[in-house]
Amino acid sequence: MKKIEIFENERATDYDQFVEKWIPNYHYFMDHLPNLLIETDPKELLVVGCGTGNEILRFARSQVEWRITGIDPSPDMIVQAREKLKDCDKVELIEGLITDLSADKKYNAATLLLVLHFIEDNGNKLQMLKAIANRLVAGAKLVMLDMTGDKQQIRDNLQVLKLLLPEGVDKQEISERLNRIENKFFTVSEERLSELLQEAEFEKPLRFFQSSIYMGWITQKREC
Image 1 (cartoon, helix red, strand yellow):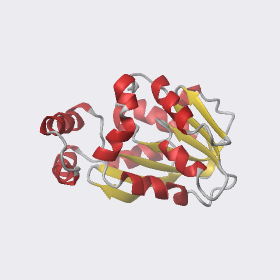
Image 2: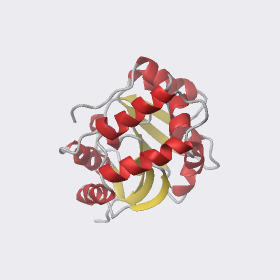
Image 3: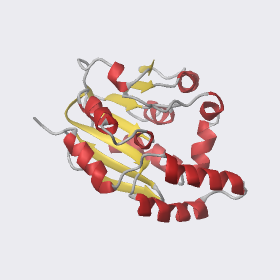
Image 4: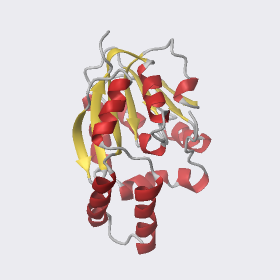
């Protein structure tokens, strides 16, 4: 896959503060994420684009024991994740792309959070989703969180997002960020996302969460 956006330097070190500010109900989603995959057995989890390890930490602190592999192309993000998860057992962190993982190893569940909008819908989105499917057993669940919607839907929901931001956010920061979301990211409509997932051998996804432009989906790899 080409043109993978890599978080470096300040973008990496400020990531945790950034998502708390810009993603309403971020902690609610993360705190309840392990519940969505509680029926997974055995509990072998693949976290694609693990970033600083926020979702891995939730799984590692849950009441059940998970074996987790997190992968991210950013060295700076992986450094933060390793520090955050240094006391967590049965967590493996890998610097690289999903395609760097052997397809011989199969997982029983996966997450893909806040990744897909960085990837162009020119075959690269589909390639990533297929690469994930190839590393899952049949019936394995995939949970996604991403910016989703056609251009008009994104534009309208950005106006809602402005109202949900914490007090004191700089007006220039808001303007620059909203412009970046609307014009620089590769968001797709709900219909297109469903098409891509089904082409990648997943079931039709179910949207279970939305907070302005951010939507959460759950699906599973099709049974053979």
